[in-house]
Image (cartoon, rainbow, N blue to C red; front, side, top):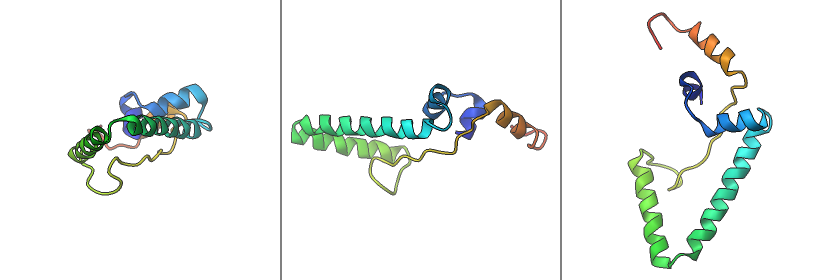
Amino acid sequence: MQDDVLENNFNILRMFVRIYGASSAPTLLAKSITEAEEKYSCLLSALDPQLAHTYKRRCEEATKEGGKVVGPPLGTWCIPPIIEDEDLYRYEISNTRPPGTS
């Protein structure tokens, strides 16, 4: 999240912080992820078993291609610490970096 704040990149957690506030955002994001995973599981179970197997295998391959080599095959979620005041964070980082670094 820190790099996303510094570069002002889109980040779903940052969006949740802006909409719901710093104290509620992590819980609501976790709830949203859980609901999406439950829907995914339900839809996957409705597929033909061979198609579901092929799809899951391809997802696992894509996860490994993305650099994941250990842990659950489709990855895990880790919600980082919230940066509540992004302007202050950028200011503090820019004033603590050695000259010539970004």
